[in-house]
Length: 192
Image 1 (cartoon, rainbow, N blue to C red):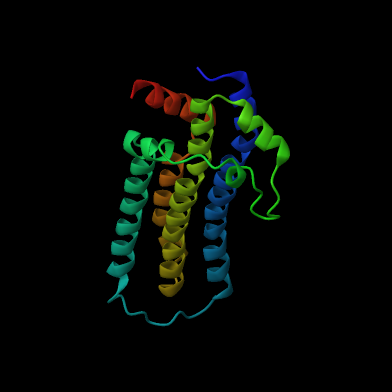
Image 2: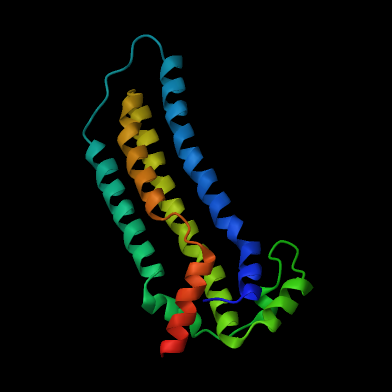
């Protein structure tokens, strides 16, 4: 069980992954509208299309989907979490706002008030934002492949399986509650 102090500190970063997830998931749905609107604008005769390379889109989609799943499983594995927990703590870097380059004095003070295991757990939780971004970007790539294929073949319904795959993968990578990840991290630290 994590302390109230750590929970309060984690709550400040808890919304970022959820906002990112919601935004990219909604944008995948918008690609469906783009495909159908584009098709409506092309009323009339549609040119003959060569289907010779269509399989490449499906093969790339399979590879990207597999990469997304495997990377997500790796990122939340105990081994990877232990690698994050074994990194040297750098409070200055952790508390620095990447946009402004300024150190968040309140965050720095909070981090220093946590015990050692909680400090490590906080850094691990923040570090797990990267795998979420990578997986969401891979999932977005799948939808874009579907959009390109549906546009190329003048068939907007072709995007639907790609969106379905991407949305399924997005639901698989839904951000875990930071307190649960921190709790798991602390358990790993105390069991070694």
